[in-house]
Length: 140
Image (cartoon, rainbow, N blue to C red; front, side, top):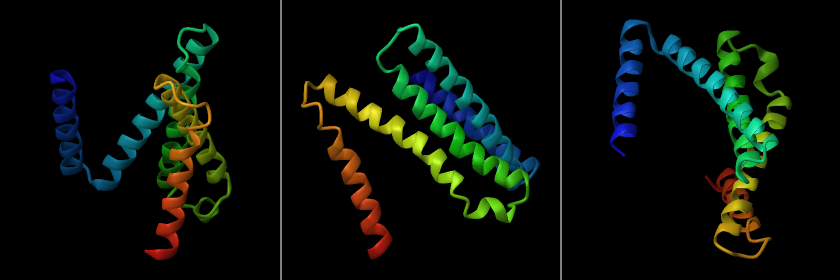
């Protein structure tokens, strides 16, 4: 746990220094860009691991990291292109969000199996998350 905390502290300091040296927008774009590219590389690594049958989690990790890369990449490009109107309410973003959803669903399936639960139990956290989101939309 010591190494991750040191990495976190160093990363926070780097981003704060970037923000102070450049500005928020440039710091944001550098961070989003770097994370998007790292997430894409991690996603492709898990696709390779899946192809090698190295781990049962690989497909969920491929979709999870691929979804992260897709969503973060969308917002990164959105900022770099100075918020073009065609990206503001584009349904393509919902397609990219679906990649992230599949990653989460696959993770819940693996978690359920790890606990020896029924094969369909993964639906509970997925449906619960959607329900809370719908309720928040209409009541907050």
